[in-house]
Amino acid sequence: MKKYVKDLTIREVSFPHELYVLLKLTDTEPLPEMFPGQFVEVKVEGSPKTFLRRPISINYVDRERNELWLLIKKVGEGTHQLAELKAGGTLNIVFPLGNGFSPVQKKGEKVLLAGGGVGVAPLLDYGKYLKANGAEPVFLLGARSKSDLLEQELFKAIAPVYVTTEDGSEGEKGFVTQHTLLKNERFDRISVCGPKPMMVSVAKYAKATGTPCEVSLENMMACGLGACLCCVEKTVKGNVCVCKEGPVFNINDLTWEV
Image (cartoon, rainbow, N blue to C red):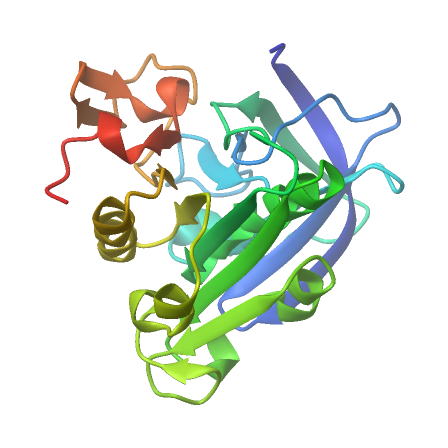
């Protein structure tokens, strides 16, 4: 897939949570083909300590409005600088990068999309894709509390949404792997993105139930092209660069103890 380096125009900046910023970007030309689960590398201007680009998952692609959405968690100087951007400005990105989630395998397949924290971001676009292509997505979203849940209404507009919170303020109390949905339903396959402990737990559930499962890794990806070797992950086939071979992997290809 062809890669692009572009200055996209910032159409809208919003703050769905005090720790997150949502940037909606557009271009004078139609945005190129992108697949759910891919990511972009963002250039951070005005931050002397931020030398390398920052990898950000593609949150959503709105073809009607020609928009690319990036949901960004403010964790360091670079991402805090991105949160200062204003509508009407520009953002330089390299995209689309990496290999995304699996395409639809068969019509009517039931796919569980499990996410936690900012890991829910790529699941929105993937859920839209699955539904549009005849699959039946189901979302299982986890957070610390109700206030930490992101884009719930957008997820609900696509497919059923189930929620867990650690404090029980929304949905069922506990972690995603403790939700009763996993006891009462079976799925054709599972796709996961979030903190590694959560992904490992879901992978264990998938192994135990014989359900095909893929995870989207969040290793630090400085270049996005497999050149800097920052994001190396050990697999059954040897060490690979997550940015080039992933970020999505079948759990059978990883060396996780599940």
